[in-house]
Each structure stands twice: as C-alpha cells, then as structure tokens.
Length: 192
Ligand code: SF4
Image (cartoon, rainbow, N blue to C red):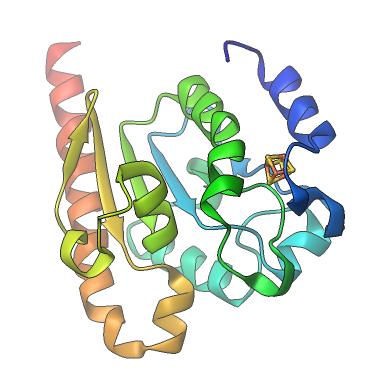
C-alpha cells in the first residue's frame, strides 16, 4: 500500500473487511506524530478508545502517557496505534484472521512514519508481527532488529495495571528505549 495519510485514513474509516467493524462506535486508526522516531503498537481499542476514536485513552493509556513522560516524551512526539483498528467485542483478543486482515493498514502507517524504534506492547502485537511462537515474557527487554528498525517487545500497560510486579521490568525496557533513542540521535548528529 503506497498512499497518502489522507487516503489511508479514509480507507481505514470505510473498511468493513472483517466482522469487527459491525459492533463498533468509532474506528481507532491511531494518532500522533507522522514523523515519529518512536512508534508504539498495542492490541486493539477498548471501550473508551471506541467511544473517542483515539488509541490508548483509557486507564492503560493514562499509564502509557506517564511512562512516556518518564523518558521525556509526549504523546504528540510518538505515534500510538494498535494491531486492529476496531474494538473486538468485550475486549477479547483479536482473532488471528482479524489481525491479518487489518495488518496492511498498520504496515502502511509504519511505512509512512518510518520510525527508528517500535515498541510492541503485549503478546498480541508481538505474536502478530513477529510470529505466533513468540512469548512476551521471553522476548521482552531484548532488541529485535528488522530492516534497520529497532523493535522492543514489552508488557502491555493493561498488564501492568493488573500485575504491578511487571512495572519494574517494563521500566527497564523503557530505559533501553530511552538510551537507544539518545544513541541514534547522537550517531545521526555526528554523521550530518
Ligand atoms: Fe477493517 Fe481493521 Fe476494522 Fe477489521 S479491524 S474492519 S480490517 S479496520
């Protein structure tokens, strides 16, 4: 898909390619900087996100905002999206077929943004993008480098709310992202 933001957003809004479109209030395409160096990818919209048409605006989203602030980033500086653009009923995990159907939209967004770092928030984002056999507990905190992009799997903020014991490792992952952003910035500055 090689298209403009306007065309891409229009296609997402009009999409009925999977059954998730039938039970939603709003599409949630994702939002943030179109030239973000850091992109965050979660699972799918929840109830609040569905109401507002915005990604990560519920309790997990508020925690994500605080986590970003802890590494001196605002939501406006990053791009926040999900694997699926429509809320799965009852907040269930998107089916693999639904995720596959929606994936071209996320891939097109990623191609337009060209982020240097992608954080995969939770098991669904990890498995959908990196393979069904991947486990978040085993992969988190370790860089995956794909086509020049640094990919950091970590826990979903909702998992941190359910299990505060995951907050410390998530903070360690976030510090790796902070340090990698600084490293990339300084190497870009020295070559320009
Ligand atoms: Fe289309 Fe994605 Fe919504 Fe399914 S989840 S209807 S593929 S926009």
